[in-house]
Length: 369
Image (cartoon, rainbow, N blue to C red; front, side):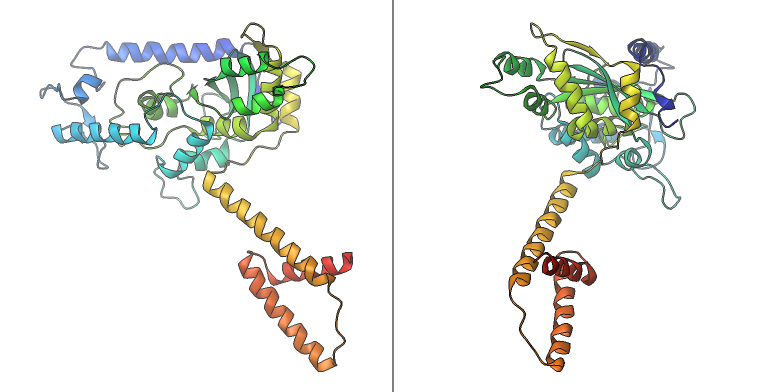
């Protein structure tokens, strides 16, 4: 079945906690290793307190080599650049995550044609589902499928903290029970999912490539990372792994997630709420769910423009069809036909349509009359 990766909903919190705890213990052990074996580049060292006798490596420039004082200066510059991208504020919106993943991607090294080049590319191709399975107050837990190359696990856990949960609960508390005045729970849920958030993922891509970026950007929901990613991501590019990108898309635009948030808010009592979906509910949701398309803001604007242009063409066709046809001689009709085809070609280029599509719209408008 397509949803075999989902596994059991029951126990998902413990499974996620176990993975995050393992990550924490391994990071602590690496940080506490003797100086001769410690490979963590600390915040203090990035600032310049560097022991020249300590040999650490970086891939800055494309090749693995020992770190120099110039590299440390470059790391500090990269940190300032990253902080500016994230506007120096706490939290990030789902829309910002998607747009930044597209505009400043951390590329995958691949020489094979047709292979994914970035995390957003992989998210579109490989991570087809992201389903909310539980929520405790403003913390929402999602499960996504793992990528096709994953050998260790079939699913991943993404935790999202919605920063404005209490504000949403306050809006709900101000709404009368009779529904008159104030906002509906659906409106509040829709507002909430577009506000600032922080996130965490149990995958290795997030752990080694993006946890540090999330930490300095102010949107790390889990363990904070202070060790600079000198090997994996020295330029601090990208923002989120493919699992997080799928979740951000579902959170922002999926009707299924909107219904889940609405249900969660409906259970709020004294600014607290606890919601868990049942196994059958999760499987049923996946069985009939069409994954939301991962679209940047630029793509959304372009698509909206095309819709407006096609609507304008349809209106023009309707006006043209409403005018009574004039009786013309055969030669004139042939000339008119040629002129119509030329006009259809011109309109088609303007509205990104084929001449045949334009003619079909005109014919449909004439028939409707």
